[in-house]
Length: 129
Image (cartoon, helix red, strand yellow):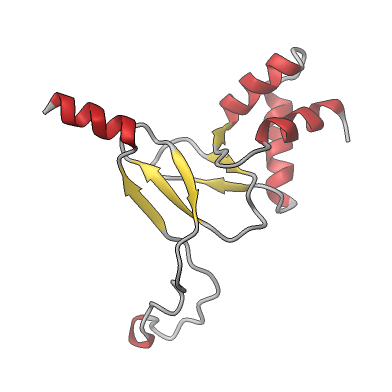
């Protein structure tokens, strides 16, 4: 593994990490100043292709990269600031889709995204009201 790829992997390490490519580049450049934006984008693309990272797109915002690719989870997204948190709801969302709503599809996976306001944005909304 090259030093550039290692730095990108290190930047993505951790819980609830959902960085944009530009955020990955900025953090990687603090550790390895010579790393180029193209290298970061290429590395992210490779990690997605390998299934090590997933792309998360919400509400037309910039794509974010989620290193939690091997553990089933859903996302909780702040409608204000765009913060994304991994959540692990109980139950089986696939089972919650009635047969008559499947329209003959063989459903293989489900993506559920929860939207709301994080505590900081909720506080700000309350103060603005």
